Image (tube, rainbow, N blue to C red):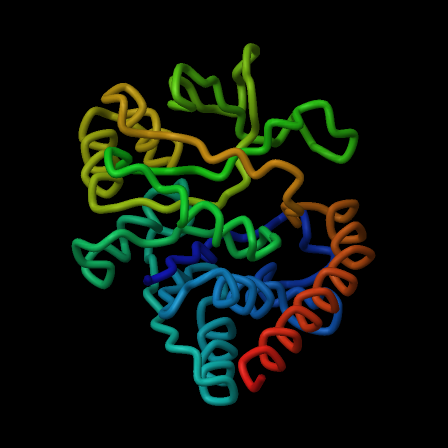
Length: 256
């Protein structure tokens, strides 16, 4: 499955840590490299990265990453990168084709098991499934910045936005979607929308085709500011060590 990663924005809240947020070094490697490796461990087989702000440096790094790891990475540059993130999703439409795809943010780190479980639990009637964290009372959540979700029956999304006062979960930035999302984003923009991803999700929600997947106690962090960066620095090494240990166990079992 292709994995689309949005990496076009400025990341102004991390400017003191790195000139280009996707290239900010966390636990020994740039954020974007961690996201790609974690997504690959979760089932992604090919990557499309949308660039924009400081695109040249990011694209050069991704070219080098592809050469040394073998990951298939295609860069798509969004000339309108200053617009909301749904425009970045649309800029990759020609590369994505008609198949379902993963959609991730370049600054969200996560346990690959979330992706594996999400993929295993996809509903046939879902145009979009969003990994959602129902633990809205977590002290480490930045609720002022989080995209919030109001849910209906069968875990359907009925409302999405940062300004929701009544909500049941928060958006982790981990999606599986299909071409219906691209069509919904186009319709939202044609109707006068700004071009945000949430506007496209809301259109699918109104059609009853947008669902959540409860990530349970799954680990993730939105590396959007310095406190979140420090949290990722503390917690990611342990997560990576656990993933390496799991990989070693599978390798041993495969040789047995």
